[in-house]
Image 1 (cartoon, rainbow, N blue to C red):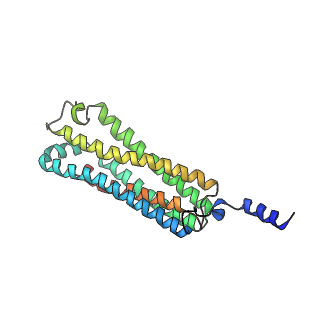
Image 2: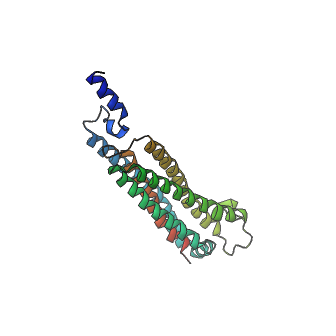
Image 3: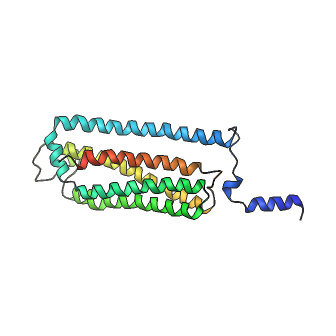
Length: 227
């Protein structure tokens, strides 16, 4: 076997993160990484703008109909909201740790933390749908013209439920997207795609997940702790 053949064979045995080279339209790996991170931050700004509109609607309608919001919030169980808050905060820790694991080439810990983060996201969605959405929807606590709860004591309660389902529904959609992204990272981690020299995707998804958690930290007190 020639020296060139030996080098080629050794190169094939190396994990992907060691062999990774930046795309030709970038000058270096560092420039590629910085551009990806700035792009993600710009996207997150648009996410903040999206939820800012919901927060403004919340503020206006709460000022107009405070009793409706207090009555509507009374039907929410703060204990489930608290549990979901703890789950998301813990998932923020595990996703941040997974970035550190990739930087330190701790492959097993990287996979474990990505898996835990994904399971936390799934648990959040399961609690939201099975213990909150389905029980409320089934008794008529629905948004807008779909509202049919017979014991409502405030005529503007449908507005409250519209805000509740819009804000938490859009947030839950982001959590579901996060599940897909985390699963994608987990699959790639088993193929050796992430390590000290290449962990861009892990950090970008981590940024996305942190904004999802941060938005929930605002939604939880605004919706669950009014009363």
